[in-house]
Image (cartoon, rainbow, N blue to C red; front, side, top):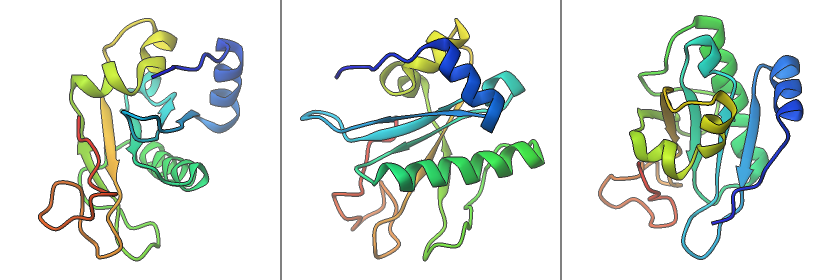
Length: 144
């Protein structure tokens, strides 16, 4: 997988303007697409990650809305989040593999790997989440 590079200046400008920078990575033969934030960790909050071959605009919208709510409440999401869709978004605390396989640019930007990642799980059209029996394989994404 190729990791794109973006200048620190651009990342910082986005954080200053919007509170976060969002990386969206297209899928390749081995890895589904994914998107994640940079900017929350500096406030003591987790970075957010969505894995799946969803439209980048959908992933960015979800990351922006959940990030906005998290910053307003200064609380880590720990239960289903209703943002107006047919089914809520399910947060889960991701492990170290999320940092090493998905949110690599966060560590590079911060200069360390001491940050948390919350993965936001999006359900399939029937409302089943990754890891649940019967979840549509297209939605049953890795849960690092």
